[in-house]
Image 1 (tube, rainbow, N blue to C red):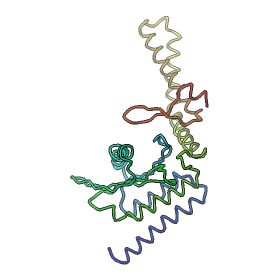
Image 2 (cartoon, rainbow, N blue to C red; image 1 turned 30 degrees about the vertical axis):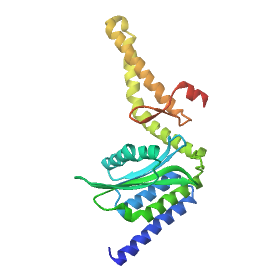
Image 3 (tube, helix red, strand yellow; image 1 turned 120 degrees about the vertical axis):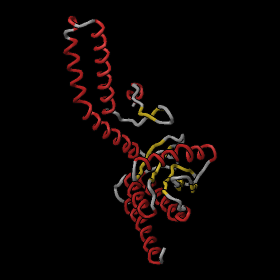
Image 4 (cartoon, rainbow, N blue to C red; image 1 turned 90 degrees about the vertical axis):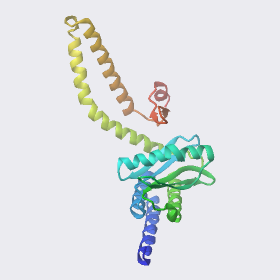
Length: 260
C-alpha cells in the first residue's frame, strides 16, 4: 500500500471513530450506532459481515446489531459465533481472537470483547473473505470495540450487563414492529379462512360428520393463530425461552404476560 493510501486509510479510521463519538452524544440507539460503524468498517477493511452482541450475566442475548453483504455471509458469521467463539468464551473464557481458515473459500474471522471495567458484556465480531490477515487491523478493530463500549455506557448499559429500560424497550419495539407487519399480512387471509369455515359450520347438519370435525379443528387452529398475534401486539416484556438448536423464542405464556 502506498504512503498516500496509508494516510487515507488512517484518516478514514479516525472518521469512523469520530462518528461513533458524535452519535453517542445524540439520541441514536446503540444498534444504530453499531450498524453505521460496522458498515463503514466493512467498506474500509473488506469485511463481508460484522456484528455487535450484548448479553447479560447469564449469557442471554440482550441486544444485537449487524451488517452483512449477503445472507450467506450472515450465516457464515453466525456459524463461526455459534460453533466456535461462543463455546470458547463459556468453556475457556475467550476474550479476543483472530483466526484464519483455509480451503476453497478461505476466510479470516475475529472476535473482540466489549467491557465494562473487568466484566465482558458483549463482543464485536466479523469475517473477511480471502487469505488476508485481520491481525494487521488489530489496533483499529480494538479501538472500534472500545468506542462502541463507550456508546453502550452512554445509552445505559450497566457494569452487570443489565441494560436500562430504554434498551429493553428497543427490543420490545422491534418485536412490535415485526408483529405489526405479520399481523397486517396474516389478518386478511386469516379472516377469510375463519369466515368461510364458520359459514360452513353453520350448516354442519348437512355436512358429513367427519368433515364437520375436521372443519372445527381448522377453526380452532385459526382462532389460536389470532390469539397468538393479539398477544404479540400486546407484549410488554422481552422474556425469551429455549426453543431448539440453541435458538430462543419469545415467551408468550399466560403467566409471563399476566405478571408483567
